Amino acid sequence: MKTFILMAVLFFPFGHRATAQQVPVRKTRLPLGLYTTGNSNIYGLSVGMGSDTYQNSESVSVVSNGIRIEPISQSLLIFTLILGPDEVYYPREESEFKDYDGKIPNELINGINLSCGTNAFANLNGITLSAISQTLKNSNGISIAGLGSGSFRNNGIQIAGAGTDAVYSNGVIMSCLNTKVHQGRGLQIGGFNQYVDFRGVQVGVFNDVELKAREFHGLQIGLYNNTQKLKGIQIGLINRNEKRILPLINWNFKD
Image 1 (cartoon, rainbow, N blue to C red):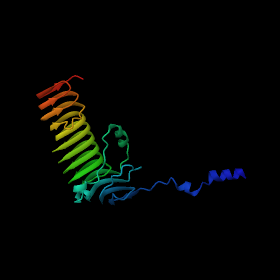
Image 2: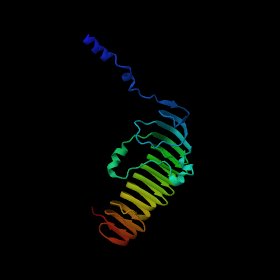
Image 3: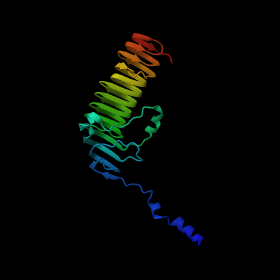
């Protein structure tokens, strides 16, 4: 009798145990689909209103391949001018970077994204154009916005009228007013540039406006240039590094 019971447990598991690990079936939508519909692979035209900024997904919900259009978003609503849109959160403490980098995006955008304002915890591979503002997890390609643009990792070109923000930037990050980078490699152009570690060329009015810069390698041009450790050249009205403070030009080529 005991042998029979053991065999029954092993070969005839309870119903709820058999269905507990079911994986949602992904749907293929061609040539049109709604990116707000979960578990979908869209080929062609992907459309919808609003985006998802949730940052603790267990899997990618939607993959848009082709052209993604978001004609209406929070950026158009009047109340967001007071409260601000629901944007993607970026960590500011270095101890949080690794965990954040490992988070799974809600959406993958492969191709062209057109919107008045895309704020989505998504990875972009291609080109995104926003009339107002946009925040993404990672941007691989070209990202252009009328007012503000943000990403955790910018690999390519990120441009906005009022402000750009990237924790890691490999390429070009540019704005008429503010740019903010934790670690940058390439070109940074803005009125007020903030960075912690940058290697390349930096052009602005004030470089290190928050006085948090630790290290700069390359060419720094601005009215005020500052870094705790320089390997390169500073050109501006006031140039400050670990060696000296000088007007017009400053330098250091030693580690």
